[in-house]
Length: 400
Image (cartoon, rainbow, N blue to C red; front, side, top):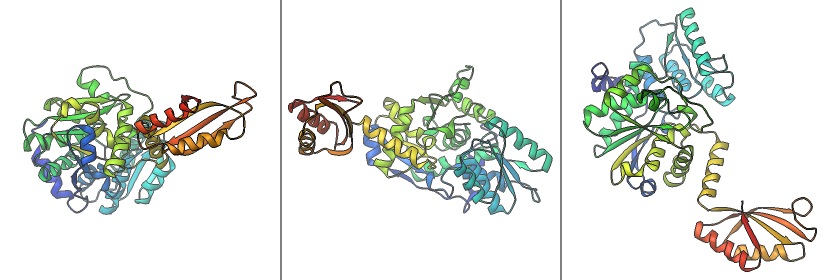
């Protein structure tokens, strides 16, 4: 497979999509590197017009269509939909995108905003894909697969081509895996440019389909994940063959590592990433022994995350780091107690951001009350000092 799709095809794709797809920067991040224990370089494909790397493959596939094609059709509930819609519009051809009925309205609106006609069909991506193929046959449309297509794979490989041209000092690459197109295309480029350089894929624990296929195991996936962009059951057969031939290892990371990576990118690198886009960094954080002391490149390959989900991830990370404390106190129900507690919290440098004072329902005695505090502190040691200050005042403090 590598002989069919290698560096020459990736270079040709890079020339073909030049000007239609942004050449994004590969930047170092000191804060991320300190947290990871290695030198981390971030390929910022969140800067693409649609916020994700999928434009590369879509642009190359559409550029290779024969003249006079009636239009394109694709199945997607995410970034591939917007990528196909945008590049079909640039090429001046109609685009139909089939999405499952459950697709959030914001994604439908964004895709339509690029000029595509959206068809909502089926309860799953598999049902949407089946309908997309039916439309392709019925209306003479070219089907643009999100990952199981050599032209799409070659386009995705331009990401690694740019990384290694801009940062030839890289010792390893870590790339998220869904259907496998990005990893396969990048490996095709990197294996020729830097033979022997380790390349890793990264999947989330509830959707390790590529790792299972490589190990010869039956595919068993499913469960809630923040990395829905790579929550794939059926990986591409072309990418699978390439990844297997290249001998690439796929690392499986826990959900919490993905949340940590999202938060680290926001706080440390000022980069907003969706779950799928942060999974490469999550693997670097989850397997530090693999990358210690090396220069490691990873793609932040998508930034289309819901604002509410991003806010929840950041708050959860603050709780895990001990920078937000949730404290429960049983207190005597008498004047001055709340003022005393507030004074002690302030003296310890804490900032109260939420208070719940219960007299009737939760207190163990009619002479007492339950107080729940949400307190912001600088770091975990300051939080410990704050709790100690409350306990010195005779209060029994439980952490929630």
